[in-house]
Image (cartoon, rainbow, N blue to C red):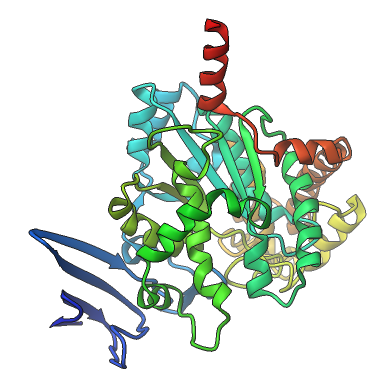
Length: 450
């Protein structure tokens, strides 16, 4: 059920398709569950049409926002509500054909499950035209946990596969605006999280990791253009901000949008528009829906995005894992800590007794150890066998947990060893503004001609 409203406001014909309830105040719109806004602007002899897809905050038992994920998330419905496209078998086959590599197991298993304009990125790659990757991390703890690894593991695979520049935004300003933290606390967390990210093995020749506090001056003119393109109504409609919220929250969407335009990085792309691909969890999509809406008005290319499903918490609670809600496995945990957390806190879908498990088998849909193995066990045949045997009752819960403990311990201890080798100089290198990618190639070519 929806309502169609047509009215003029500030030289603009507004057509509103409103689902659920709609409330009018002294502004263009309020914040219902989900709706589209179609704006037709008169600008001289031109007619400009923009469509904004606003955030489906609460639909059918789940809540998905950039800050809150609750309930049993229906990903098929999110695809429909958010207006994105599912990653189907045909697209997976094209990725393999274009890159010559088997798709990452996150793609094969539907963990990265939807996208916007991923086919355009593949078009660019086939034509030999450059693009770049953009992802980020909001530093809110001294150590990242295993759930934080998901986008970075996938992004590393993308960088290795396509051999393209990568920018990683550390949103220290966002955490200062949204959390009860001092700037000094956030800066310390940012530095430590940079070490965590570098330890994953990104290419220093193609990777730029930047703190917003440190780099925003380099891209502030671009941020200002974005801020001017957004309206307060758009930002409130998309993120649900309230009048009593600090101004930093209202302006931050423009800061997160800026890196999706290559103009933000003249030391990588000295000229021209370049396509951008953003791997992200689906809850971050509202930022880039707004970004894609205003990109043509600013003369920039719309960023492409690829969405991941949420990493489940140990307790089996619906939503995504959080270091502040329930237990999390941190990258600083010892093997004993990992073993204790999995054995004592990982929710099991197996039978309450051995006899019940033998008779009824396990429920792999709700079993957290099985769900985590889907993320971290890259052997498809082994995973399929575990799920099959567990469902038939031929494998006990303790056996599945043991496999997960061994898998996680290997990942965490390997990361810890790599992190020990990351020096302060390494952090300064990755975060330094230096010629990279096309800009470096251009400078090297010019130097050879002399």
